[in-house]
Image 1 (cartoon, helix red, strand yellow):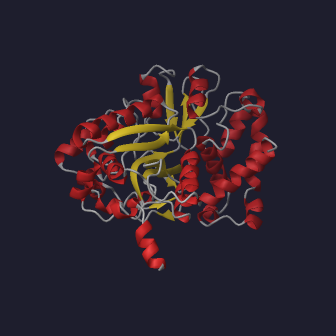
Image 2: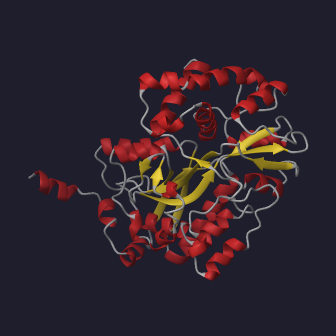
Image 3: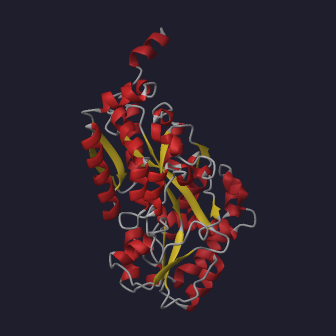
Length: 395
């Protein structure tokens, strides 16, 4: 009886994962995909709008960008729908996601059955030399989300004012003490601010391998003590004395552009070039990474188990992994987000799209960006963010 009930109520999304690509394309035509994605950057919003126009023209799939300030809002909506028994016809068709939000959706059974193996362009992804396309913050991806961009933390400095930037967290503290008010970071849980905390935590630990395992509350307090000591010393030297923080990455960029700070950072290696091209920062701005490397990861799109338009979402995800879409995204003129594809294995015509990209004066080459540090297990970020808010906001 229980089996019969399960078959009757099986969500449409679960069935979608078992279809051929031809069936998926046919069913996608006429669907509207509600893509829940961060909407805090005009340049990224423009790229998403372009992708929407392409899939509508070629596949008859309409895209509605639901602009989020926090991905957890979309995750919470799907969770609430599941609790209410809404196993089909959900309000979210696609989510830009990674890290703790992916881990939470996987843990709670909120994702469509494995589906990325059905997408033709998934074969173009570099699964061997870019291991973060297979493991999201230590959690196996298991074909539950499709990679669509590579990110790595880079620090950005005005070379006219800081010709020799500090290349370690310890040196950054010393520099900030000598140059009070000239550095800041976004307030956690903004993802970029939280990434700065993770970068500092990794550098300050003698053995950061502990971060690859789920957090243990008993050992976490001791492991994070160097981080809190570092922040306690850093905060009085920050912009506005550490009594206020920029809300997010764009706000920190604005401080750099206005000359209020001399060092910022980003999760997109080509951002500095893109900012210069748009006249948002001085043309003397350049990029650097820390001596031991910086955190990098892959960002993905995932489909909730109860999506209303799962086939349309798969068509859009497949387009996002195409050489055409990936090359446009890597171009600093449009975004500057590095590709997940194995460019060397692409057909010559597609490879030429990437070879023609001018990365600009402020973008490091892939060789200069090495080494890339692995993200900690998602549970560490939840623990650190909560403790940060308790210590510095009293919440």
